[in-house]
Length: 197
Image (cartoon, rainbow, N blue to C red):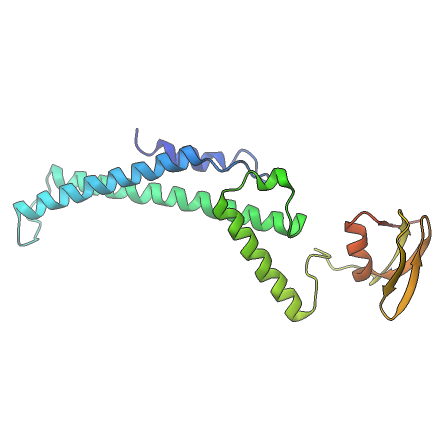
């Protein structure tokens, strides 16, 4: 039955609100096939109507006119379902980029369509370019910090590190007071942790 595949594709988005599933090639292509079939039917009916009435004026509404309208509306509905599916997946990919960084884990990347991987790369490039231009890492804090400085405890020996304008030795289990912007990359790499004691 026409229309069910498009609805099933959109319904698939509601299962996991924040997770991304594998791109459903089969269902996507089935909906595309339905769109092509509706387009073929509309074209065939319109050709028939033009042959019956060369002036192009519709004198009365008959079965052909109603059939063309139904096929056209079905075509538009399936198109909206496909666009909704793609748009929702693009939003989830953007959200993953903000949460996980520029390089997604391999298991997540395997779920993406090749065009979605290209979208992620382009989005990351644009975001990185913007952050370089304004000289601000937007991925550091989603919410503004209360204090620009934090205490950190070193989990692994890092050695000498240039922080701001001075060199600091970060040895295992040492505690330091540093700018949040300098500590966040080290925290995300798992080298240090925020110390609340």
